[in-house]
Length: 103
Image 1 (cartoon, rainbow, N blue to C red):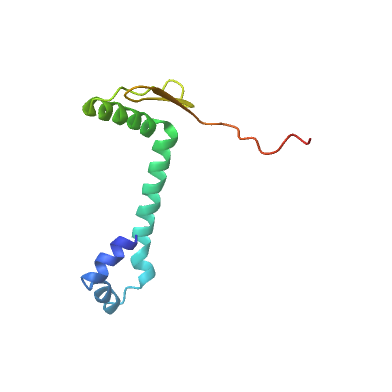
Image 2: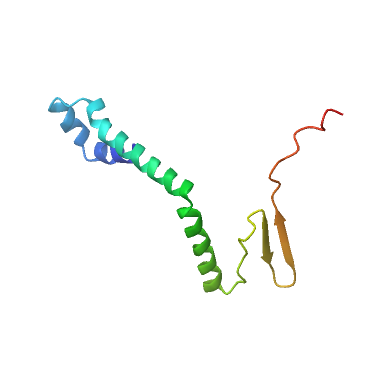
């Protein structure tokens, strides 16, 4: 939204709109609605699983292009990364320990 208004200000389009009597609020409403719609669409795509699968494919293709060993995504909490001499397992703790259980 800021980029759109920045470009309009650079070309003096905001001044032209104000001179014709269009308020800044009326000018901002279409841009705000479009940005909210785009945000909702991206959230829906991420929630549905389409974007994570596309990211996995992208990573696999990038590994193939660069000649690296492919990484596994069968268990997202365990990620193996192969180096030249060793393999490393990166584990993410799903449920972090908050306290000591009342002891």
